[in-house]
Image 1 (tube, one colour):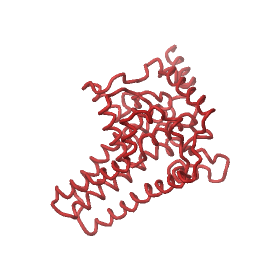
Image 2 (tube, one colour):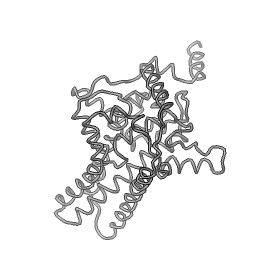
Image 3 (cartoon, helix red, strand yellow):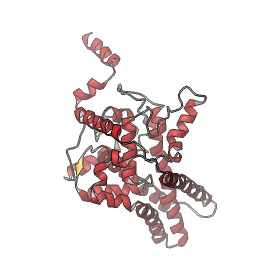
Length: 331
């Protein structure tokens, strides 16, 4: 698996010498900025409105149920689909499952699948170095560098208008008809992700207020929470947390973000073994995304599931930790 990682990174680096990692096009850059601004602002406004409805209408089990269930589904789309399946091919599955995962991930309103994958692969190639999509270390050596870096890695990078070159970072997805079509219909899936909770809220309460509450809580509030959970991996887990492995960037494991990100917050583990479907490498490290992959595997819907061996994990640990363990064993 490590050999595959090296080959993949070398291939991308060789290709990037011939092609630029971003597309210099004023129209596309302005369009990107507008989409980013709307993506950030609309769920925020929706969340404010939802909180305001506490004064006008009860928020109960239906609204909370729609929020939690829609959040869970779209986060599965992000961590299992966009990330482990499409960005890293950490397991193999059939085309219908790939389409379902791509649609669920699109409902999270974090950009089309090919756009998301391209940015993430670029992040891995240039992690915390010039060229990284969203490193919080971009202002190192400057005043208020950490605070400015947090803002940039969390939200600011989306507003700079950069368009990552998908032909360089995700060529195989562009050439896959089914996924290219899902990518093309991105806004349809975002709207569907808003319409489903609105419809269910209306049906379960038999009121238009219920439909509005479903739209707000299962739609916009859910997107707001999912956004900031995912973006915290870009920002917080490259600044705060523990490092179990020696990696070439500043990735960390942050236990406080594990549950809301479905295991994504074992981020140092992920950077140590990027093509692994398993992020939680210790028995106590909860990894909800990997559990979903295992369920798919049990039912024959996933195969070739990649995970590091005990020897690979030991080899990646810092030398000081290994020396201390050897001294303890000797005693």
